Amino acid sequence: MNNDFPSIDIPWDEFDKVTFTEFIGSPGIAYDDFKQQKALTGTITTQDGKTLSGKIVYDLDEEFQHELLQGKNNDFEYTIPFHRIKRIEQASLNRCLVELKSGEKLSLSDTQDVNEKNQGVLVFSDIKSDPKYIPWEEVKSIDFK
Image (cartoon, rainbow, N blue to C red; front, top):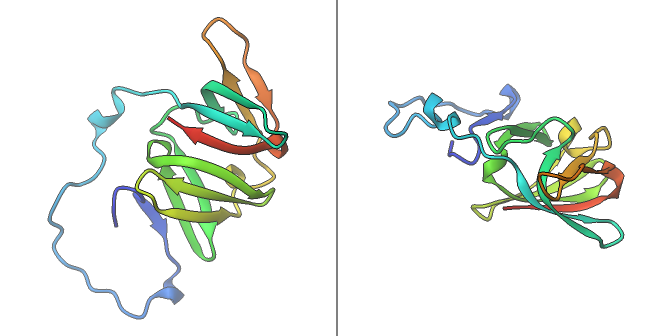
């Protein structure tokens, strides 16, 4: 396990063997890590090539970097903090390609965050303006800062 994936659900039938060893290292995310909540920001590119930049509210309910993107790859269920995500690109309405800041790439599907049930995104270009709503089917990609 690494910090890119604080949670991966793996079905039992995928295991041949499990060996438990003593854990050495950092326990991962601590309570104090959530004191400085940073907003999601970045650039959205629409299917027709337009771009909008600013504060992002993803799926109309995730707006901070500590919040989690959920998706499945085959039988593996991933839960990834947004602060680890560099880019989300729609491969289809049912699947997204997720690129992490570490360079790792995942194809995820089967959850609302990455399929046609996604509620879309809000983009606040500046603090004083009303947000622009972009339906999920119009989103081509999101590049996070």
